[in-house]
Image (cartoon, rainbow, N blue to C red; front, side, top):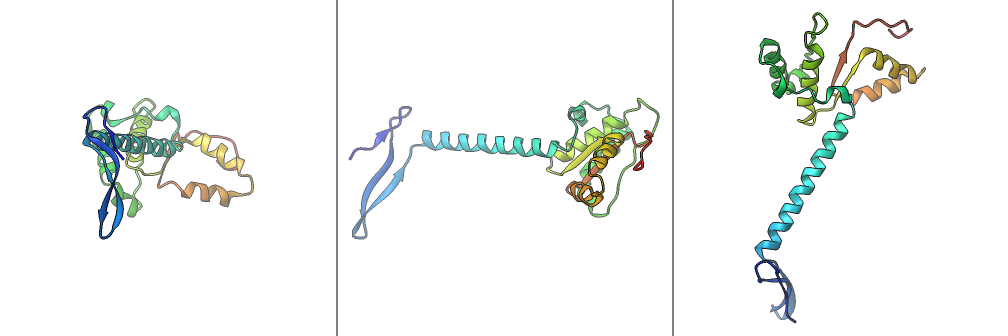
Length: 173
């Protein structure tokens, strides 16, 4: 039985039967073209899986924050501190060290927080970033089941609360 040949290089591809150790054994034989195509497909599949995982992680970060990156940030002391926080994330996390960004409106606090969130998301760290009023609204949907809310929040390794100073007249705020 003749094996198929590769349309690119003309080398044989498929299974061939070889008589070994007193019996017939089928051996796979694939040319480099086919092997390279498989590797490329596997690489593309891994890339899709990676992008899917990042999208799943991003579900904790609102769409309005997803474009904030250090690549577009101005290089200054605050940006360097935020980058360093990300670089030392494992240590910061294990030592329960947080970061408080405070200042006047329009100074870039939300932008830097978003940069931190997105950098850590790309390192597969589960992050929740939302503003305080939305988190309070989310808490209210749990009603008397505050423990369920806490269990949901426990999934995230980092919780970034934006606009913490925004007042709201509720029993939770």
